[in-house]
Length: 285
Image (tube, rainbow, N blue to C red; front, side):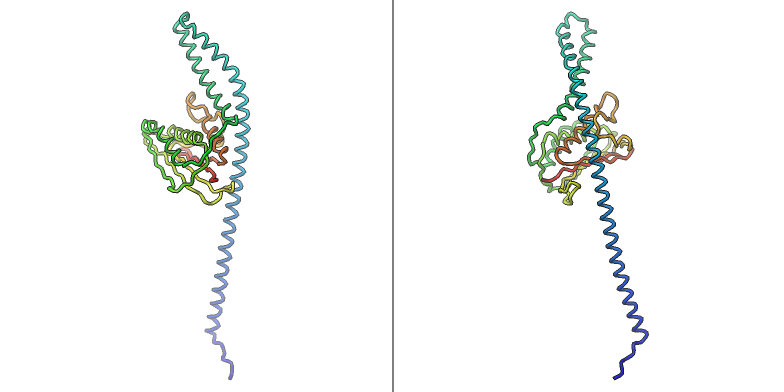
């Protein structure tokens, strides 16, 4: 029997089928290339972020060591000065009221300076810590309850969004509470009446740059924000955006160190007139 000849119509259908298969294969290749490119870009971003964090940590550690050395020397000068003023005030009855007032004012300012320097010295020493599994939400509630009057006084609203099943973290409770309190106070200072502080906490299963799952805690305010030139130095000692005589510039420096000692990271994103967001990542043991 003679072989049946293929009609032009069947040849066209086969050609269309082959082209469709080629298109599908090309689409798959394109998707694979896009995925590989995206993964590579993400790895490059993570590497750049890690390098930036390491450079910042090294710079802050160096500045901390320098600040601690200076603080020690200045404190050695302030201590006898405060002692001598106290001795003068023991004889206040033989001094005029104006003289007593001036001595008390000097003593108050010296004590404030000494206390500020002591913070650096305490932070730079290897202080004993008591770390135990703790619910991060409980620490947050403790911090906020102590500041209720400040939020009310400044007409600041709080919006919390905490994941219900956050794992417990092995942390030093008072130290982490100090971090949360400081971030809350900074947010209050940055906002006008009617502002809102958004606080969120979530469990991130994907591993961070330090190869561990972590709990992410965000403090985001609706305040005045900060320009890049200020943001770059925000965690350095004695750097403050507050008015003269109000801030010491030690709060965020100490907070950064506390989070680092817990094996975590702390970062900040801010835009002038659009608010500031602090991000804390604490590793899950």
